[in-house]
Image (tube, rainbow, N blue to C red; front, side, top):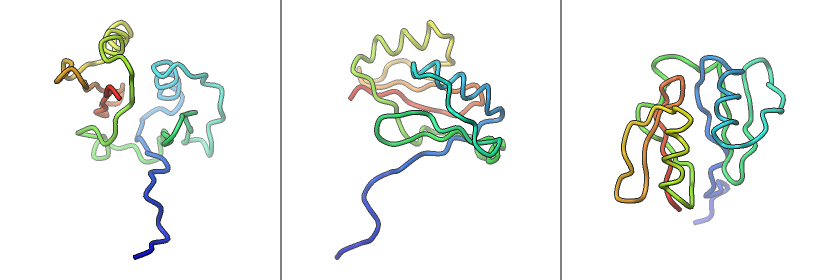
Length: 117
């Protein structure tokens, strides 16, 4: 059966309380410049390879915070990524599990994951 819907994820929206602070934090963690435009006063599109990430302060509320990771960021070296996040004082919510992934929180409390690909 053919479908007009592609089997691709275009972008993930992350609820954030302060768009400027979230932009700076995410761009710093990802090592990308934070020089893009904040659109409509509440949206920032992070320059990504592959599936996009959009930070959105308009959708922020306590109920919308990710309680579990809904996606993971890739790394080729899980130990190096773990140490990098520790060095940057990111709140880690797990150790490296199965030599493959770990979880952490962004400043708004969204639960995220880094996984060795």
